[in-house]
Image 1 (cartoon, one colour):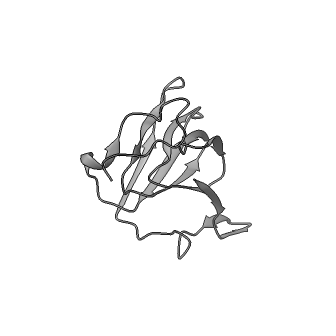
Image 2 (cartoon, one colour):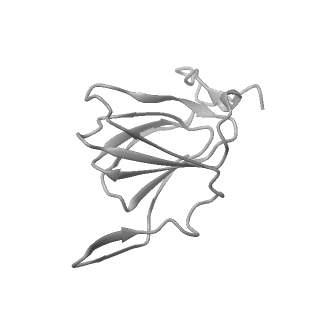
Image 3 (tube, helix red, strand yellow):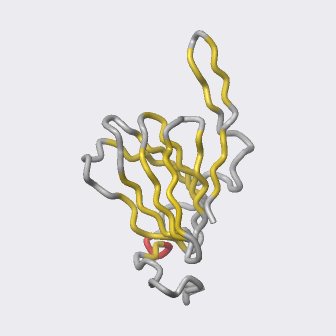
Length: 133
């Protein structure tokens, strides 16, 4: 199941700095960011076979909707010090992007189209596992 961590941060009269160092449960192989999302758009809609991701809304806010196959939850990322770790089995969508929101994603794997599972968990079958493992 996903987990939310608070990044080490330093704030003073000059502004804030949040640090992503020695806090992630994986080595970073890929970095990308999502921005200019229209108000009613939904991003994501998948889970992974191997890829672990850390999501940080570095500007603005957005909501991450998660289904682990056994539990559903939502997390609002509204601080650049808040980091959501998504595990491979976490089906996720991202929505409710505020104007100007930028969602940074740090990934444990390089892009691989075959790592994506585009079908959501079946309703009423919370223990459904990926048969390709």
